Image 1 (cartoon, helix red, strand yellow):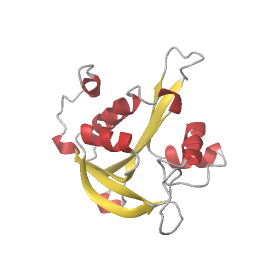
Image 2: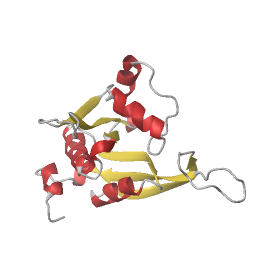
Image 3: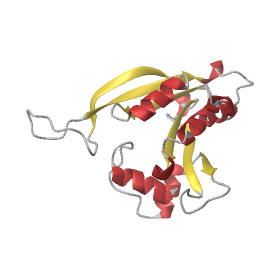
Length: 178
């Protein structure tokens, strides 16, 4: 997880961090401070890594709002497009509900990350906020007026976990016909 996290930070397109986690202890303090999960490949080879992705579930806010979950997700770049993100997002819904959260809110889903935008919408999350000029991301087009890279907007996504059925099975989201 530590290497994957730092790779995503260096890539600079989907997480807000700039400095990498210098130590495994620092990574653990952030990513593993609450519930954390790993999607493993049971038959790794030269092409497919042993860790396909990882995610955490933790309170988005303290105290009176701690029933609202937040999640952070990383898919190994070598397996992007293989539905690992869909599996983790669906598991997030199940596990967050099982952990007692009543809702989830993702603060910073960047507009330029259309794979993420489509993923959360496909899993029933509702876009409830737009933050214009929220992020200085790598690879953004140059603004002709300023000569600087454009700032990307961020979306906030919400889901009411009380509406997730008790018999919800995350694997149903991987139906090959969808």
